[in-house]
Amino acid sequence: MKAGISRRAMLLAAGTGMALTARAHPSQMVKIVVPFAPGATADALARRLAQKLQQAWKRPVIVENRPGAGGSIATQFVARSAPDGHTVLLHLASILQFPHLFAKKPYVVSRDLTPVTRLIRGQLMLAIQPDIPAKNLQEFVALAKARPGTYNYGSYGNGTTPHIQGAAFARQAGIDINHVPFSGTAPLMQALMGKHITAAMLDVVAAQTMKGSLRLLAATGPDRWPSLPDVPSFKELGYTALDTAGWTGFFMPAGTPPAVVQRFADEIQRTLKTPELQAQIDAMGLIPYSGSVQDFALQIQNDDLLFERIIRENQITLD
Image 1 (spheres, one colour):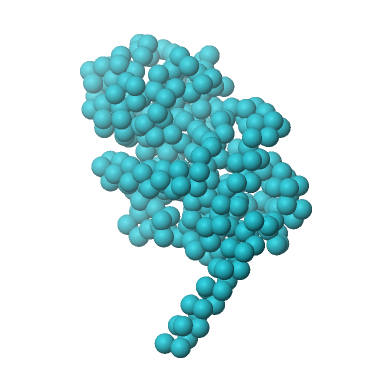
Image 2 (cartoon, rainbow, N blue to C red):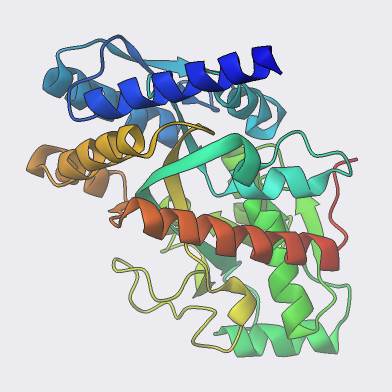
């Protein structure tokens, strides 16, 4: 009992200290952990932000790449780190999907991490070969219903967001369309352009690059992508299972004091509004995602329930 009281007192004291210093700059080096290899879009974004934060805080801000295991290695590393605001995780919405692909979850976001702030918004596009005789989503669904099991769609791999969103679309549309996993963007695009697969769920950057060579039928998310205004959203076409937008956001270990979380979130949102970073994000084909800490926490809660249901209904597993 005495040890328990002592530990609680220590934690309270540490939390109080953090709250008192929350308005000041970090007291030591800040580490941004990225679950992808160097060169990935998220990695490039993290490095641009690290440079800006270092200039603002007059403290070293480094990016540490910890790829592997579907992002689980990086996620668990940050979850085990000290909740003092000096170790943060940059991750995609797939952080919510990955645990639901296993009977024994490697981590639980709501238990192990604290949402900080959204960073950029993303969407997926359903693209088909131009030889497929369908000019829009309705015609593609009609073709698939007329010839069950004939058509297929590619993704970046089993259990990835394109796989999960493609399965949600097929289930709601009532079509039998096969999933073909690939090991990344390049082999997926090669297969699609080589007409080895019918369709693919592409991230918006790839879709924008290939829009003249492929037919884009629909976009995930609540509305149309600004630079592709002619592509309707799945939501407006009646597919409500795909109405959530993709995102990239920051997380800290569970137990990080709210004031420390807010300090980091405020600095990120301020940095996102600088003309230089806005231009860099625009050049990457992405859109900044604003909102409060509470907005992000609510989206985490809603998206987690959505992805858990989609994965369960479609029996998607990596076990």
